[in-house]
Amino acid sequence: MDPVEKIRERVVLGEHDVQDCSSTKFPFTYAGKDDGWSLDRFKRGFKVVVTRMEDLSIEFDMIGMDVALANAFRRILLAEVPTMAIEKVFIHKNTSVIQDEVLAHRLGLVPICANPHMFSFREEGADDKTISDQDTIRFKLQVKCTYNVKDSIDPDERYRCHNVYSGHLKLDPIGRQEFTFGSITDDGELKPVHDNILIAKLRPGQEIDLEALCFKGIGKDHTKFSPVATASYRLLPEIELLEEVTGESAERLRASFAEGVIGLKTDEDGKTKAYVEDARRDTCSRNVLRHNDLKDKVKLSRVRDHLLFFIESTGGMPPGILMGDAIDVLIAKCDHFIGELDKTSEAPIK
Image (cartoon, rainbow, N blue to C red; front, side):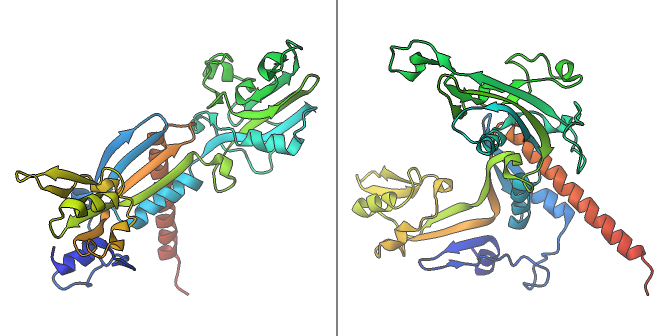
């Protein structure tokens, strides 16, 4: 690759430093290079490739995008995409060993399966008693521990309901929610994402009776509203073998990288030779640079505008929908910014 193109397109991993970290693709930086931003050029170069999709996670490549924009999506996913979470807990009875405030905090962190698009934000300062089916989900939890088989030493046999799980939260519909979201059976849409999250432990005679209200919020206000367990990205690793590596050196080269990055093959002469099998598996640990006889035979870099994006949802909403919501939030921010600029340009000059 041309030295100038290397600076523009690659981040080089050295033994003691990382070179060309900052982007230099700006107008008039390089002679003969047109780096002015163009929407048509961006459309031609931008591409999204989904490499893996599961119920709770998605991994995709964003090609032709600046890191700053990808980081904006990551921050929006963490802090500005709304979800539903338990915000208010009214405890009628709690004789367990867990304090009321700890119990309420644990309930708040239970992810709720609910589409936030079907609910509105509550007005600031609204009274807790003035709830509606448009902005609130109500759950009830009523569990009392009793003896089952007194002569058993196994808690699961000796006691009934000695473990309080998130599955004990039962929907108490407000207004038309029972018709909108189905019945209040376990198959209803409004429920905890997981039924097996342990909330408290009880012993005979102990009881928990409470009412929990879910409101719409964003992670910037409290992390319980964050819709993702993690949202991250990394640059596509690129590994180039500058010289042929064979024999015992090839074995050490493979052991210096994550599994599946470097492969070994035997040529016609029976000689073992190393080759790059899958560079995207590399964690960029740079362990290979510790070997004096190998560090000059390998070049490690990352592709500057090829991002590997990973999103793991908490379960309230599918990860693909969350990315779409993040894009909508960024569009709204841009529209607001443009509106403020228009106001400034229309203001009279004093």
